[in-house]
Length: 182
Image (tube, rainbow, N blue to C red):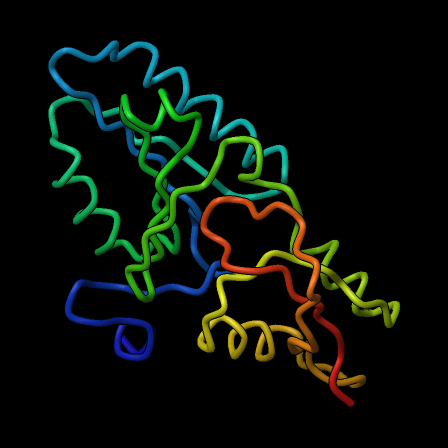
C-alpha cells in the first residue's frame, strides 16, 4: 500500500524504471486500411532491439482491446515508457514514445531508439569524462539524472551547450555536455 501511495497518481502507479517489471510497453496502433501484420512485425522488432540493449520490454499483442484501452491499462500498471507504432510511424520510420511520469510525447527515429545506454553514460561519468548527449532541455529530466547519479564523486549535471550542434535525433532539442558536479 505504501508503494502505491508514494509511486502513484490519479491514473495509477508511477514506477521508477529500476523497479518496474516492464520498463517499456510497445503497443501496435492498427487502422482499418493498414497492413496490421507489418505493424505487429515492427513492434516485435522494436522489442527485440530494446531487449538487446538491456531494457525490459514487452509488446501488447491483444487484438480484442483498442489501443486507447491498452494505454490506460499500462498507465495503471505504472510502466515508465509506452511506445506506440502505427501506419504513419512505419511510413516515417519512427515510433511515438510517451513517458508515464509526465505524459510527454516524443517521436523518435527507429535508428536512434537505443543509441546510448544508461550504463555507458554512468560508466563514462565514473571515469570523470564529459558526455556529449542529445537532451530535451527539460529541467525535470536534469533533476532526474542528478538524482540517479548521486554518489561519492558528485551527481551528473548539464555543463554547457556547444555552439556547433550535430544533427539532432527526433525528440531532442539540443546537444549538451554532461559531467559530474563536485
